[in-house]
Image 1: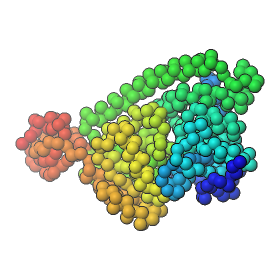
Image 2 (image 1 turned 90 degrees about the horizontal axis):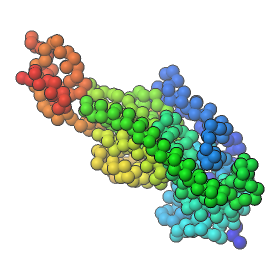
Image 3 (image 1 turned 45 degrees about the horizontal axis):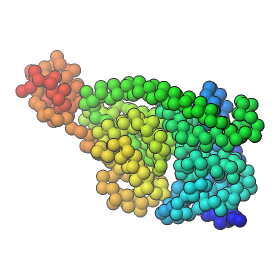
Length: 494
Ligand SMILES: Nc1nc2c(ncn2[C@@H]2O[C@H](COP(=O)(O)OP(=O)(O)OP(=O)(O)O)[C@@H](O)[C@H]2O)c(=O)[nH]1
Ligand SMILES: [Mg+2]
């Protein structure tokens, strides 16, 4: 017999009294003070209020026609126990990982009752945690009244099934949890389609796993024909579900391809005009949206929640000397970002791979910023963005330990320390970005007649001006221009 005390309790999570009963209490008051507290509520603020409203009714969503989907969404998580298996690294790493799992669970709207992890060489192939430990977890589940167990990894369908059999509650893994958050946060048609595609791909592998035990708990399903006491759907049901999922996947892929078309057109337009693009990327909750707001005054949603942003926002902005460039916010990354999501969000992530410069935002106040940097770079490699010049922007300097900031600066030579909250370092960051933007390739010296003020304007926006002088015959300008712009200047070259 194993008892619960054999487990390691993640210390900062062991205090169950920290987690109040009221499910709403898990959400901090939104911080709407960025970038300018005096302003009218921003787009982001309205979106945030809407999101909180949505969250309250999330479990009442009924628009799903597909039973399989309903089954999936019924995994609405409520009172949860977190379970981890730690195979390598320090105790601190293990605790960070559990703390992050707890944040993810809260972001999904659940209340974390207990967090436990076990050190093992490898997860048990049958039950994830050691078989002997399963009973101990069952006792904790019973004692706390939890209705869901979340495992800190991606589990095989058989592991989920075995655990559910023994624990008698829903068991989900980290991947399902992240997919659930994405499903709650997706707003645009594209983000919704991408998320659904990822969910379906995940589910397809696990039809038996989901169907088998969960259908006994999903009350409506019995009336739906599965029969009382049945083990769940038979082969025919699984076959049917699989076929329906495949049809749906094919449709989503087609839809996404179309949406990608629009995105590609926009990008080509930008490339044709040679407008440099800066992508803000980084770990979730690092402050990417706050930084975009601070750098460009965009009213983008900022929330102390993981994966607040799923739709990239692009803002046009100008350098101090008037050159136009774009800056985009993007979906955050996380350790073990489900592969299905990277696949599904590929077109969104292409914006990062195609950028001229990546601002890689890191939360300097996080316990393990180096771990975040490494996790983000893994995704960069997966989306083939490693060739893009990168500036590490260590954010939240106001809340970070100066020693950690110094350590990061030492490790990452191409690095700048800022606070999107206080504005510290922002001017320097802008200057650094401007100096790193690709420079137009062709040098020119032109005399532009006054009738062509439009052309001079264009040089201001797209080119780089070395000198400018108003003469009797027109404006004498020297500087650098893109090939397209140099072509337009051809008639006036000196
Ligand atoms: N103390 C401090 N908090 C900050 C700073 N920048 C952002 N935050 C807070 O960090 C949280 C996350 O900020 P976001 O800008 O939403 O982060 P994000 O990287 O866009 O997050 P996702 O879109 O969820 O991946 C919010 O609560 C912000 O108020 C900063 O410089 N200092
Ligand atoms: Mg964001």
